Amino acid sequence: MTLTIQTALFIALVGILGIFIFMFIFYLLIKGLDKWFPYEEEKPEQDLILDEVED
Amino acid sequence: MNTLLSLADNLQTFWGYTGFYNVESGHIIMILIGLVFIYLAITKEYEPLLLIPIGFGMLIGNIPFNEAAGLQIGIYEEGSVFNILYQGVVQGWYPPLIFLGIGAMTDFSALIANPKLILIGAACQFGIFGAYIIAIEWGFAPNEAGAIGIIGGADGPTAIFLTSKLAPHLLGAVAISAYSYMALVPVIQPPFMRLLTTPKERAMKMKTPRVVSQTEKVMFPIMGLLLTAFLVPSGLPLLGMLFFGNLLKESGVTRRLAETARGPLIDTITILLGLTVGASTQATTFLRIESLKVFLIGALSFVIATVTGILFVKAFNLILPKDKKINPLIGNAGVSAVPDAARISQTVGLEYNPSNYLLMHAMGPNVAGVIGSAVAAGILLGFLY
Image 1 (cartoon, helix red, strand yellow):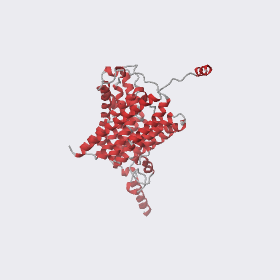
Image 2 (spheres, rainbow over the protein chains, first blue to last red):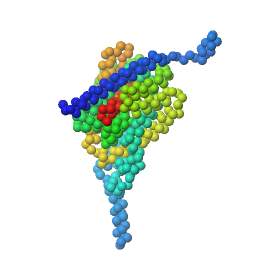
Image 3 (cartoon, chains in turn blue, orange):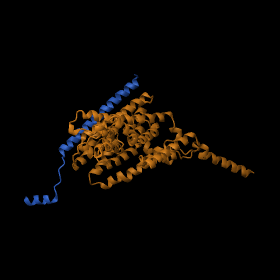
Image 4 (tube, rainbow over the protein chains, first blue to last red):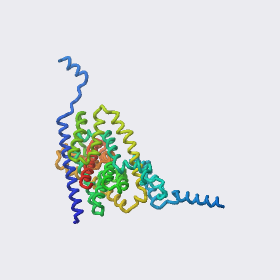
């Protein structure tokens, strides 16, 4: 195996590992977004008015 | 008599300038390839927005003329109109602008709703690095191999951006190869999808994705940009513009800018990019044995990317709970080629289960593939530039 091939294999290995690490951090980021900014169902306007009246 | 002789001389000079006098077999071959591109775009509707400009550009770039006359009409002649337009490709201005438009038209909800799909977008990048190794084995220099490998990302702008930096002399071959195979994704991928999956797997239904909040959609491009900038700064020109375009779309207060980015701007750049990339395939510089090798490696890279995407999903399913398993038919979508690869998942899925709508699920790995290939380009740029 020549030095060029060895270097290429090293770059390929680092590259693919790098992408998986990057994507895994991205995965954690999206999980975090879901935790910090969860979806809340919007209340219909009628309910909001009723809430204000009750207050 | 003298007048007649002078007229004959003038006619001979004129004849020397015509395409008929200067034509070589290479021009005819490239013109025929250009016509095939236009035919495929019109009759088969394979990526017509790209193949028509590229195909017509091939006709323009291969009109034979007297190159020694200094007419400044060829794409490689400094100062010619086509040469000036081609600078957007050579200097790498067009790809980030296209990414801006892509960002402004992409909905990342499918990915945000089911973030584990992002890993499929990573697995498919084996196509890039597999092709890179093959190119080295076939005698290409490391920088050339990097440019050829990126074809496996199935992302035209990324391929052009990286090749313009690493191996500008291969731009025509890499760009044409990338766009051709992107157009041929409906032909290349389905046989491997069927070969590597069982009928039961193909019919598998996935859980409906959760609803994504608007705040998440707004925060995603901002956080994505910061993550990219800090982890892979060399991917910034592409991913920075992608996330910027997406913020224009999701912020809800820059509708006009988002509409311009995903409409007139991306259309203009696509026209300029397609036409000049097509014209860059001038027979005298394009018809070489290297171009043929680039095409062969490009085809292999698409196959490797598709196969690894599907096999990754199958392996991933081994550790996923029963109710969260992924249909392996969406594994192909990680190769980017938005949205065609995702549409193929949907089409093949419907063949085996008419009530199975995989498109929304496949869009997750599909947009992850765009991010993945841009990151791969950044990594290759970091190592090889």
